[in-house]
Every structure is written in C-alpha cells, then in structure tokens.
Amino acid sequence: MTGFRLPKVEREYINTTASITLSPGDVGKTVGNVGASGSVTITLPAVAGVPMGGDIVVLSCADQNIAVATANTGELIALNDVAANSVTLSTAGEKAGGAMIFTAVGSGTAPTKWHASFMLEETQTVTVAT
Image (cartoon, helix red, strand yellow):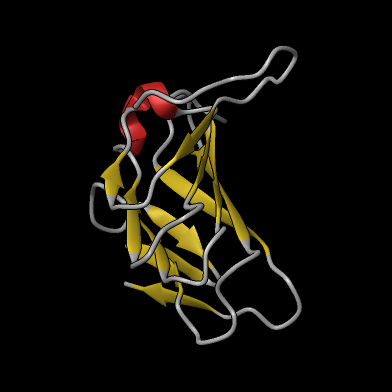
C-alpha cells in the first residue's frame, strides 16, 4: 500500500476512507481514516509473514466505525482474549481520537500472534470479537 513520508519522519502514513488489507510490507507504517464517511475495516497481514516485533499503528481520525481484523482466525491478543479475530471502535460518540498498535509477538523466533495495545481517549470502548 503506498503512503507518504515527510523528511525526518520515520513512519510512513497511509490514509484510507475504505476497507483495506495490509501486506507484510506495511509493517512499520501508520494507517488512519481521515475523511472516511463510513465504516473502515483494516485487515492485518498474516502474522507469520512479518518480522518479530514488527508493528502497525492504526489511528481513528473520523467519527466512523473502525475495525482491525486479522487475516487468519485467532491471531489477535486483545483485552483478555488470546484468540481474538478483530477489535472495533464503534460506540456512538467514542470513535474519533483513539489509536491502536498491533505488534507481532511469539515465544520463538517467528511471531504467532498480533498483540493489540490501545491508546484511547476518556471512555472509548473497544469491542473484541472472537
């Protein structure tokens, strides 16, 4: 997925107003939904194809539902669920301004799960689906 990077900015930024599927080449990038007029689903690449510790940052920049799903079932660790499939910001009045970091983790040399970390404002609610 092509994005843009300013001089001296380490992370490339991708903006999307529609659902997208990321590839292993998108690890290390930030994805946002500025200008989205409807729900956006961002599908992470299969974790086995990314480097251990690689991450993707997702920013909720619109008052629209934003979901992050895994390419393969059960590859997500989120809010006390070690086999989740997706996380979503969808509660009315609690969508814009949140952020999530997805990091490839595992116990050996190859990652086996995406770990979701949340940077939320006030009382934003994350919905976890298994």
